[in-house]
Length: 201
Image (cartoon, rainbow, N blue to C red; front, side, top):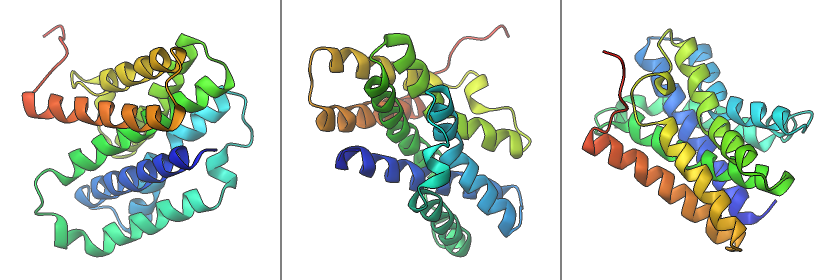
């Protein structure tokens, strides 16, 4: 695994651990609930992606630094929540950063296994949104990805962009960083511009 991809994974784990932990705190869960949502938000998408790619056991369950970082980030969020809870929309922005990081890492992983467009797009998207779906289910909410939010759409665009740019030979490290920033930027723009997907209502 390249250094850039490793760093991207850690960014995603920390960001999603914070997002999951803050969701648990907002739902008045105890410390176990905070750790559970932090872990599931940050690592479940990668576990599912590995299983889809035939990587067993999943990396997130055997490479100890990943769950360790997740638990530490969740514990720190639990301990210092009141100190930064006043920051504007911290949950949304942490979630957006995780979305970008895991879109990039998931798409990169899939492309390395087999450079097929549907595989890269599906695995990149599942890596990015899978943990958030589980988090919302555990928090007794309709998953954000299933509502009219411009959320999974950003991951789909980011994953498709990864495939297209990788096919023309863009260097992997630069490409991973670019897709992280692209997906993150799309999600932030969607939040600020209030982009919504159409629904039947």
